Image (tube, rainbow, N blue to C red):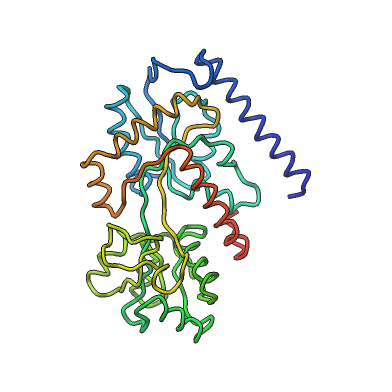
Amino acid sequence: MSRTQETFSSCRISVRVAVRMLWCAAATSIPFGGHTQDYPSKPIRVITAEAGGGSDFAARLVTQELTAYLGQQLIVDNRGGSATIPGELLTKARPDGYTLLVYGSTIWLAPLLQAKAAYNPMREFSPISSVAVSPYIMALPASVTASTVSELIALAKLMPGKLNYAGALPGSLTHLGAELFNAMAGVKIIGVHYKGTGPAITALLAGEVQLLISPAGAVMPHIKSGRVKALAITSIRPSVLLPGLPTVASSGLPGYETEIMHASFAPAGTPSSLINRLNRELLRALTRTEIRDKFFSAGVEARGSSPQELEKTMASEIGKWSKIIGDAGIRID
């Protein structure tokens, strides 16, 4: 994209956001930041991923609680296919608090993987709160001799280009996390891509690949059976979800971190009074022991945030992964 095209695209996005803000002000008849006592007065639509996935699970848990707190039904709207589809739907919605989005980190990483991004999450999303985080496990087949991250790095350096990692869909965090490992460790483990985490785990069990960075819940049964060994957890700090398992950062690769965060958003231009109300009620839901236990049983840790903290996390993640994506030449167009 030329500099002129980039400037035009930026201006177009800015105009769209400005129009939404004016639209919202006119529709609600309140100044930005004002108090909205009658919100919500009708059901709220919550866009998320296809049924059965992590984002759908997170969305359904919190919408059940918010329905009670807000006094209106929150209706989950599942959307399959690319992560950009829910993102685009959010950017086209009226910024009045009646269309929300609950989705994983891929919602703000997906545009980095496209030559022509469908939306700009930093400009076209209004962050509400994080919802939950889930670290990944660096897993190897039991047949691989390495038992620590340092040993895996040494083995990969001894056999450059001879080891393979299983990537789920191109651009997924299993893919990006492995490329981050390659870049930070200075090794060359070759990616083999499969149509999802399930087939990637099957390949790991069959010995077709020697490394998988997998969601904890998906690979834990195979670790318990002894067919797969867990080297480390990919969060920057030890996790209560997997006590005793060291982090990648503390066992051979300082600074390494890969985890998925599920978060909630409204369209850009949604009044701050509505964002603050939604944030307050969502944090209230996430403090409930029943909700936290349900997340925990699925290998996920409930974790809320302020809108500002979520925005900061998004900016940091976009900066980090854009370099990895650019250096590895990853595209999903």
